[in-house]
Length: 144
Image (cartoon, rainbow, N blue to C red; front, side, top):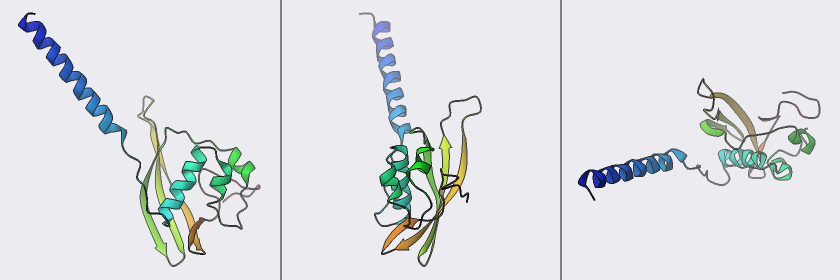
């Protein structure tokens, strides 16, 4: 083999390896929050929504919720969205989890994001979602 051919093969392999490393690094890891925290409750709720597991999603709501399975059926969360924790505030038995929802960069304008806050209350040592949380905008005809 000529030295220029070998050099081109080596350069080609280096480019492929760099591309693979960039791809792996850009995939990101899902954060796991400590069980029993407001963040873990919100994360589990959103995972259940993405999985379309209404019973599991509803298990994270307080018992007095106006939301039921038919309300959750009307929602869709793309598995391609990214949810970032922005801030959590806890005051006694109440908590607010603020998050930023980012949608894929698959358009000319680079995707988009929006912020939402989910309220929780501590019931029997467990954090439960209160009100009508994102991505719901209405439950039983009631809007937040």
